[in-house]
Image (cartoon, rainbow, N blue to C red; front, top):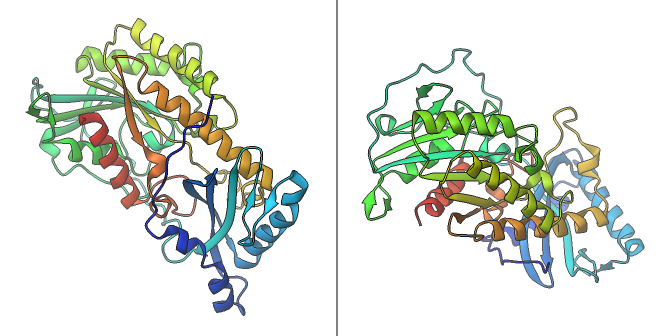
Length: 375
């Protein structure tokens, strides 16, 4: 299937990526300064979403860049004057760089989580203007953002999980992780927006997202499928048919599944939900970017020292999954396109792990989700 591409406007990010030489000169006497790895990519001259790698010493960042420029011809790639390398077969161009890590891209200190579980609440009765949102997926749908948030409209927002209603505040009950969530922000952002000529008066969220999951985990027979069916069935019984279903996943399947394979899994997941008796429309996001280091190894050499062919294959793999996600959003009358989270500025994603959003990134993702769900 032909790649589907889209131009990304980064508002100066390209210029930022070109600061490596300036940074090197300014810190020539201090090779231990930490920098954030960056990657700009394009395909056949059309910009792709930029991404980041790891926070590493300046000397190591330059060593990695130089090594890949020397290795690129061995993979059949052409090296340009600006240091980028191009794969003639796919048209993918990669340029590695770095920006200062501190103070903007250092992972914030991990906030201690109070051990007490949020106390259940009694929400107001739901009416026809209540938006009932059920979500699942991987870490961007879980509690892995940097910056916790509580919905400002506490009297008109809530979360349902396992027989109880809870305040719509991070970490969202029912989702994995103990940091920030996009959904608490979505609840605030969506209140008052118009759907079917009426403003949304209340938001009830259900979530069973799990970090690092593949779409294979959510289809019938997958490891997370029983949880999905159990949580969705419970939500329907207690809250009613969702007005919106949101699937937020894709990063784990890059270079694992082809466009057709991902779509086949999506159809199987869709059929499992319909067999449950859920008739709600499904919004599928576009999301493929995650260069996160492993939890077991904060200084992940496999991520830091990726070879030229790895970068090219990652961009090809991302294009394949993006194509599948776009198609999933327009497959039929009960499917809808979700937001393109890959297009959120890399500077709002960085936070030192190349995957999850900081507070401004979470706000941007929430606004994108709210717009998609109410269009």
